[in-house]
Image 1 (cartoon, rainbow, N blue to C red):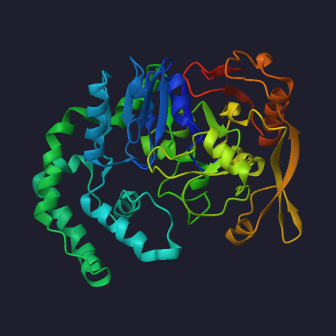
Image 2: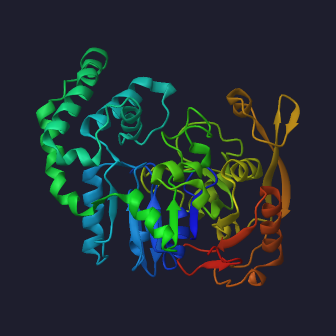
Length: 427
């Protein structure tokens, strides 16, 4: 009954897509359990690059069943566009399953997201503007539209009317926007119903039966630990729970079913959007990391903010997720530096702090305390085993492992599917 959770251990963009894809050939189901099309994964297969935003990375693995769980918010237009794009490239998407309990991102959710962010001005969160937050807000406020509602026109009409009663007041009286017509929204949503229907299933039942039948199920988180609505750098976070606990609620599988929790760590640190970032670089090193690492958001298209590795947040991710393993990505990007700084602690108001402060104010004022590690100049992209790495690269990995609190079981030495060193098997 192997059930694994794979998630980002930083602020997202750590390379989860590659990690999921590598495991895809060994697993029977890959499940997205939270987020929406605000989470981008890049997967390189041979000379082909795939950018996935909503679909689980397992959709690229023949024999694997990709699942969109109940905790995901689904934009039907994005879903159908992604499926069409993959079909045109010869990818079989017919095995996809979508939870009937997943919530729909409606056109008015997207509108509210964009106008609210614009209204906040300098206080903006840095959302993707794709309606994610407003959709989760509707879910919590119990006025959300679920996938299953597309198949009962009367229920759909009632729910859209209830949601727009308040939202149109907001749009017209606060934001000076035009009201959104109920019938127009209903008509658009119903237009997606038949196209999506072949994929809709009771995914909670499917996944629990799969585990009972000793199938291997991989739960794939979007974003990262520090963007978790409860455990991230609030309010500069996403609107769901990318942490390991979110896999249980977002897929309907109990915590006793989870065997391993794998955290994806970049060999340095990046962040997209607003919010504190202690190791952020504003110099040539930061620009070099951005350029060499190709640090541009898959979904947002925005340049990522870059900084040195932060062991404080890695330890935090280990603790809140119960991590059993790390997958270290993009080690190759660090090739060429004579010395590589690693943040081992923070200085806050003259105090040395080795754990993530719970206070937003303290974290905002945290200054990194660095330890310098020797770098390497050798090309590591062809390395197939840990011993193939230069001694200084081996020492860097071992130091990060000791500082982070969980074993590093795999290392990415390039973007390709085969450019990975596996130290310990995840399955």
